[in-house]
Amino acid sequence: MKDAILIKGNKYGLTIIINELVAFEAVKDALFKKLNDSRKFFGKSKVSLTFEGKSLSIDEQKILIEIIESASDLDILCIIDSQQETENAKALVSQILEHKKNVINLPEAEPKNFNNMELKEENILKDETISNSVPIRKEPKKQVNKTKFIDNTLPESTAIFHKGTLRSGQEVISESSIIVMGNVHNGATVAAKGNVIVIGKLNGCVHAGKDGNEGAFVVALNMSPTQLRIADVFGRAPDKKGSKLISTPQIAFVEDERIVIENINRNIYESLNFINYH
Amino acid sequence: MSEVIVITSGKGGVGKTTTSANIGTGLAMLDKKVVLLDADIGLRNLDVVMGLENRIVYNVVDVIEGNCRLKQALIKDKKYPNLFLLPAAQTRDKDAITPEQMKKLCEHLKEEFEYVIIDCPAGIEQGFKNAIAGADKAIVVTTPEVSAIRDADRIIGLLEANELHHSRLIVNRIRVDMVKRGDMMSVDDVIEILAIDLIGTIPDDENIVISTNNGDPIVNNPVCPSGKAYMNICKRIIGHEVPFMDFQSDKGLFNKLKSIMGFNN
Image (tube, rainbow over all chains, first blue to last red; front, side):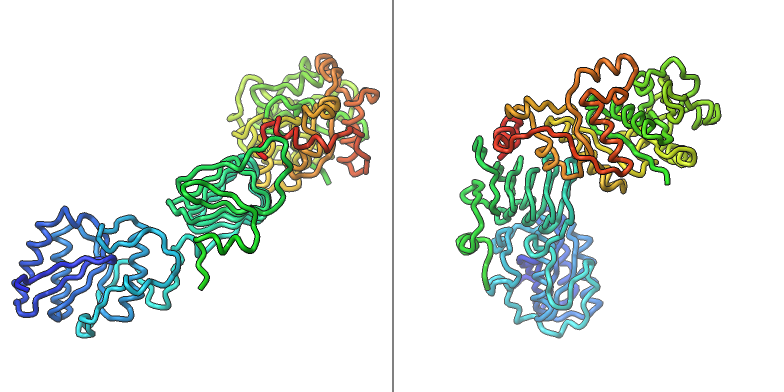
């Protein structure tokens, strides 16, 4: 390649491929010019950074980082270098990026829902060129979990418990899922980015999948909500006049842009598509 | 071993003031030393219902501001020497006192009286907060109507948030004929929605209107069903077990009621 600098984007951020044959000074200028010209394109995104190609000393890396920060509005979260940490960190960063909704719109970007915690093979950038020759990584601006990758930001994977009945006027909002151990009275609200489970009567308003997660579900022992929303789909429990109180546990989910409510039996979980059995 | 009980409801017009007057009077009839405290500053009615409005010289705001001594503001009841009323101010509003001041006042009153009955104003704002500040227990009054029940539910939630647990319920203005027809919720329906313990039910009674206008609480008249009901409540407050008066409710019409009342099924 003739260019001193090639900027490649991936899901997690930017890879700066430096032509090994070019002197460092030229590299600096090229980087500055490229970023300055495309300042608007990159915008104010938060990115992770990877250097490829020419091996750089710590000082050289620092200089390049300063150039990036001055020539563009990018917010560098961290530098990725080693293979193992790359995979973990990239996954975590992608979670952070997606949840901050600042992802650079790239062709390989995946749809919002992560249904399982492990990344699919094809999404991991093959980084054989990244070697351990880049010695020290810069202090990441965001804490990157170096240990085993446990993602607590996935809506469905964790839940908070709310012990006690929710009376009229009370509301509980969760960033993950929520389990209410009690009733939800008329006039109370339960909202969660993930799923909602009510171990009792659900007579109030419920909003699962608050951030647009259409895979979220609502379970209640007694499903009679005033309003039921999953992501942007709005629904209400069937309003049969004179029917007996529904006393079987029911589950509500989205199918074809509509809310569907079914009795819970052991087969229902297999036919629903949001829970993957490993 | 004194007790401060606040009578609250959320919704206006369900019978808090009437209930406060009758419970206070009933407890006095059972030989307890009782003081009634009107916390509805600016819209006082407890004095009218008790028939003591002509005797007011000082009120609760005067006491708190130090313009008079507590003894000067307390009004002895017409009939019962062990029953007193501390009236509210009519010319001020609910921001005239703070919860801390109310708490201190209640502690002061507890030294002299066995029961302090606080008549709480409607709403959930400063007046309510003042009224519950000094309370040990709460009694929630509601009528068997959807709107009153919704507000009562809110109030119970607020009471629990303020560490006033195990409130007890009074269902007021029950009309047995309407319950039988399925036009009104039964006491059981109300209890199921609100999920707190019942302490009494009061039937809808014309005589209450008459007694209020006369300034003579209905509990003085045990022949009336509502008078009897109030007396039963007072007995339960002091710890006697009294069977609930028999208001027949029809379980079979439960669901019809719910749909008429607008509850979703």
